[in-house]
Image (cartoon, rainbow, N blue to C red; front, side, top):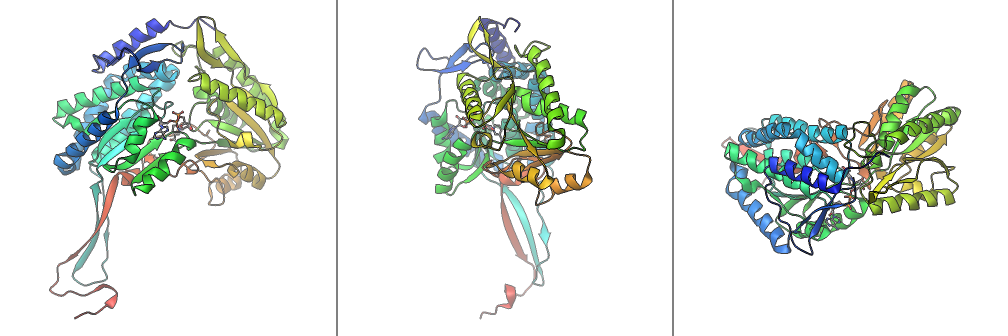
Length: 513
Ligand code: NAD
């Protein structure tokens, strides 16, 4: 592996990017602080002061006042001007934000830039949406009556995000929430506070530029305690939380206990089926990016390959060969040739090791990968060779999401068997089939087919566009964000009946008085 950059160099690069995004001073505490680290070297960049309970409360109060005093009554197209300006600033600062994403999440250059592009795209989408928050008009059964739906802002949206998409997920929520008339309090991952401060800085600049109140958005820093304060705060009308299934199992019941609204975007365990008729070159590309891209740290990462037994040996061999080539391109995410960056940290590496051991104990055969590449200058960085493991059955370890690059290979004989394996996991985020058989493709997309929120044909499991609704079923939480009509989750619906007649007929023919 080529030499890694020094932590000091990354610190200065992060400081410069932050300053350009309007974050001149970091609230660095002398001790007991919250480490902002980089997985590139495993080194500490800054020690930031975490938000106290009082800070979180005050952020919610501020956002709540901005909502009720100004924002909910600001016309939606006018709210769209703020998001349009944000989109312009994101374009201007695309490389600054991409630098911060690489530094904090370890993403390679093109993926980091792609994540920022996703923010720009959702801003464009939300600006259009600001003139399209349509309600319906229904036929009333009563003469001289009009029946319609109107949509209204909800209030404060609490946004809790995961480390692996440190900025895109925030933007899906925030761009849409802001045009819907909500205000936002964001608790980013404790592993990615810098990207959050930079985004907040740009949004504050956008607000100043268009004369919108800066209080429409607040950031609070810290780990689960800060998240829990938002979860339990009755003034948070919608809690949108992205992260592990474990986190969702804690957050969901707590928000439900106060009868709040919750939008959960949780872990996946995504599979691609490769049928004998598939275009194998295309399937190979889709599987390699889906399984090894982002070092296996996407919620949509392909974790299972379900391949027909007639082509299993040959296709798996090709995957292993492709992984061999990837092996030459693991390392510093800033290096042009790198395709696989680091794992986020020691815990991720430990869970990868454990999963590989458990898989071997359950009869799995490691075909390639799994070894750590130790960089002598950065002993706290975790670079690994993506692993491929052939499994005799879909054992428990395969049914769990291990957030690291492990691809389990399973084989099938009939398409129904493939679907059963595909759906035989607790999670339901993303699935795909590679086939040239139209019957199989349509069967996969039918109601008895893939049970995920995202179901693809002849493309891999990862790399969604913002125009569609994003999210998954079963243990993935059921939430939908980003495009299509996901905006409805950020608003409340009122059904209005207007009587413009001189009579007062009751519905269903009821008579009274
Ligand atoms: P995580 O669950 O450890 O943390 C996610 C966020 O939740 C963090 O901000 C964390 O501080 C907060 N949190 C944790 N416990 C909490 C609690 N009890 N109350 C309130 N907040 C709490 O996840 P991670 O390791 O940062 O991210 C990886 C996971 O996220 C993977 O499982 C991945 O599949 C999932 N993910 C899902 C999506 C999606 O859209 N479905 C997108 C990205 C990541």
